[in-house]
Length: 76
Image 1 (cartoon, helix red, strand yellow):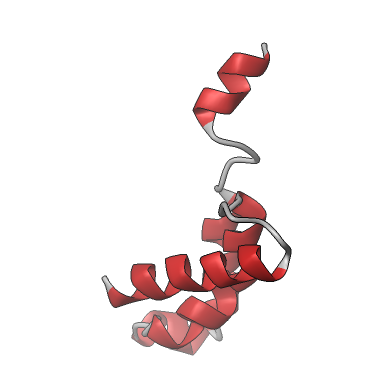
Image 2 (cartoon, helix red, strand yellow):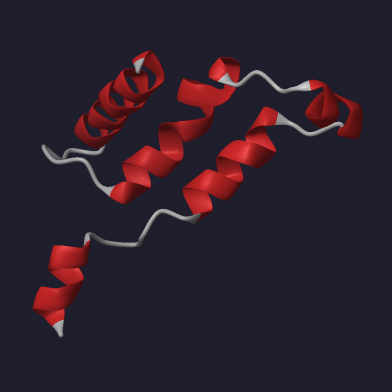
């Protein structure tokens, strides 16, 4: 839960630094690694294979949509 809170708070700060008052998916992508990297604990197999936390975060972030479903429906 604290990881999600850190991610949301960091994304809010990222948005504010860019002059926006709303969080966009690009803000979540920008802060995902620093906010979550230290919260992942690899199992033995992951460590043996040399898997990096950043690789896992990249895979999860890759699944984020470009825009919310409601906005994409409104545009079509």
